[in-house]
Image 1: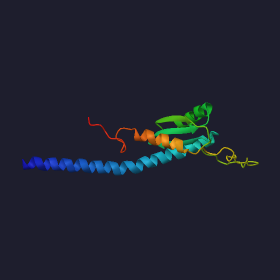
Image 2: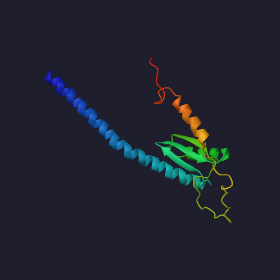
Image 3: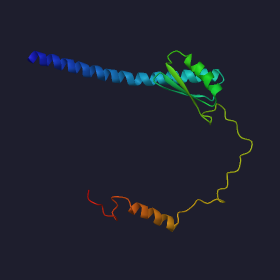
Length: 148
């Protein structure tokens, strides 16, 4: 009986130690792999003329953020061709994510004038109507709750 408890204790200590080692080893390796894949993918996309495409990784699974379907097809082909990449998905966004050399605009456009259309303010009748609706809700402090 005592021997089986010692064996069981040794197994539990071994499993807990193994789990701790796995966690301590996995976290830095995963971030290193993600960083390496992101750097290599970004350089490959730049070489392919896709410098406005942003790429990110979770583990070995990548996501490219592009601005058109044609750009998505090219970016997916480039990133999928790299060693270590398991899966890549494309997300089409409307605004550029990053730009290698942003060009200055020739003349800034004036800011829109919002003073002509002021924001609506709630009137007393609106507030009273809302207050009445809130008071009519079951369980409201102003309204007694009927017993079940």
